[in-house]
Figure 1 (tube, rainbow, N blue to C red):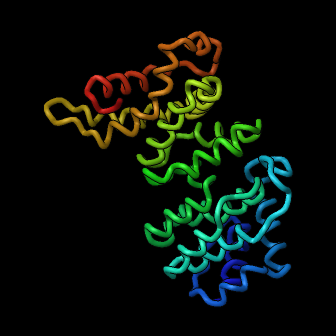
Figure 2 (cartoon, rainbow, N blue to C red; figure 1 turned 180 degrees about the vertical axis):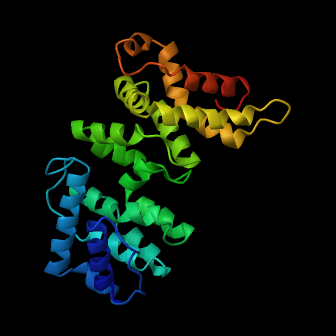
Length: 283
């Protein structure tokens, strides 16, 4: 298929909640993406609007210009030809997001592509670089965190709805060890300057998902079995997620925890973190 066909099919697929298999083809006529026709511009605008609505964001979302260039279309085309090595170059050509709509349109096609495990490792890394919101809400590969951190600083933290978006996603139990490490590390990074935001995340998680968190910690504690070596791979990602809350409980912001009515009954998580710290599993 041509690059324009790939981009259009992927945007339609993403707008329809990524139902069915992702469109797949070989790349041709990529030069046409430099001046996309109206049908593509309409498709990416609708995709960005749908993504904003799904994430419960006002229009225009998260600041920036209320218009879209062709960069998100490049990301959609790359997803459509993810088996072609040239897809990585398309993603690199997309550059950095120019505003909220651009950020959301990229995320709308990148998130399901990552979820479906499309492409090679190099493709996934380039896709997350091109869609930093996807990297932020899922997790970037170690050493490639700067784009996700920039998206946090430039788009989410300056806007109240961006903060709510972060709390909504980070307040869910992590779905993988990589996601757990990333979120725990980012909460620890935010803790000194944004303690209330960090507490919002923990309060949302514990008040809404406590049974799942209890089971998550219980599974991790199996790595502390008597008579066997400590299973660091089982314990460390989970313990890392609790690190910032442990620091807040013992620091100058401890009084703020007592005003949070939804932030109770979390000692099971802090016990795991402190045990892991004593064993040198986390620092």
